[in-house]
Length: 253
Image 1 (cartoon, rainbow, N blue to C red):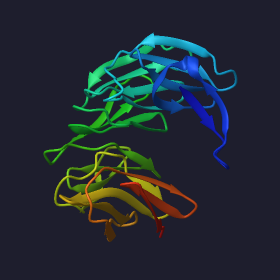
Image 2: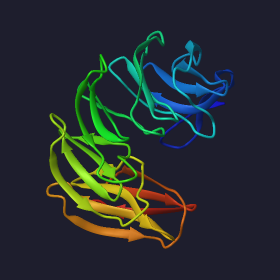
Image 3: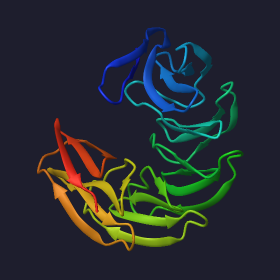
Image 4: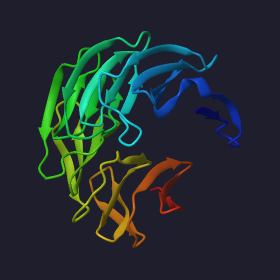
């Protein structure tokens, strides 16, 4: 079932049971893009909730290990559960480039100014329209690069235990700060104000670290002292962490 909710009050605006949605991949001004329970990729029109196109998924995805995606400029970039990445035309679902392997798991791509950024064994920048490589920076640790996020000509991503800021034009290092000793998050960092936030923690203690984007100074870490996967989001001058059914709001600087 695919549901659309009013962001102001949480009330349901519409639902599309015929979409057979298993995973929500991305949304643009025309459609919502999903992976179906049958392993297909589908575009569902926002206005009519009807299917615009359905194609066999060119990358592996499942309800247990879903793909991750981003959409921009008429391209849907999908990273499969095994790290294979492909770009599709949002108008018809035709594969435009890929698949090509960039890691071993599904990591959400980031897209900005005609470039797609990918985590994995290397932090890589590709031309969105063609898939041509612009630059690539290999991981310095055992876990590889997590999912990236882009803001103001800088791409931020976690490399094992380090949070790194790289220039979008050539991938050179603006700053890198070590903020965890083990088991850092593969999720994309969150940008809010002059701060970048990333999941961090050691065994038995999960939390978040905040870093000043202007120079890479570690502002402060926050941990809840419990295990379990968390999620980060930002809105209204706050960063929110959902962890073990507890929602924590933290101030932005």
